[in-house]
Image 1: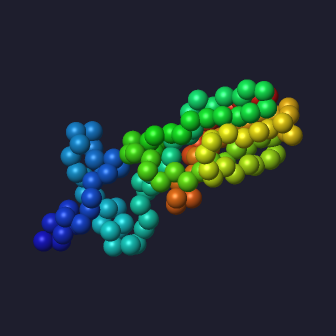
Image 2 (image 1 turned 90 degrees about the vertical axis):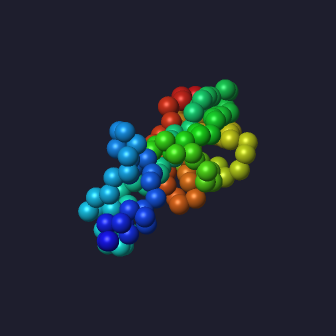
Length: 126
């Protein structure tokens, strides 16, 4: 009866499925369900793509997926790291004017609504 309850209460995610797509229910799932531990499978955004520098302008495209393969639906912004400076970007267009920081090597990370930050994009040097 308890196993049935756990199976019905859990919703399948990419973290819960094995290679065949079958639902896995483990002791860890039970502990997560009961609130004893946090989920080890928190979706984290993939890094921004197509990061490019043109003159003093850094541009990029939004990632479409999280690292677990789920769709990234809660993107709220980016952080641009250039040398020792950090530029938050929270509204389109997804670009930063870096004329005051040249020369610089910059990377971009994506931020979701839970505050999860992606790995860095490819570096761009101006």
